[in-house]
Amino acid sequence: MVHTRINRPKGSKIDAHWRVRLAGSQFRIIDVMVEGISMAVTQRDEFAAVIQSRGVEGLIKMLRARTEKMTATVK
Image 1 (cartoon, rainbow, N blue to C red):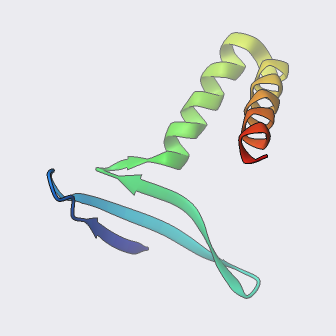
Image 2: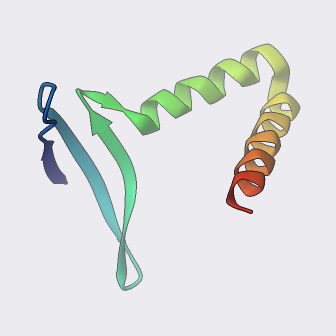
């Protein structure tokens, strides 16, 4: 776990915690927690809600749309 404090010039400090794991010879970030909120848990909950309302195919469509949007932004 890597602990970071972000000092903002005109705002309150933000504590962030980066969960890292060794993958081969490199460390990879596997989760980020800001103000006690885990991105991994938030994403898992979001995926579960999509599966419940639209099924697995709905989740796959959502992820494909996000991937296409990110790819278009990078170009």
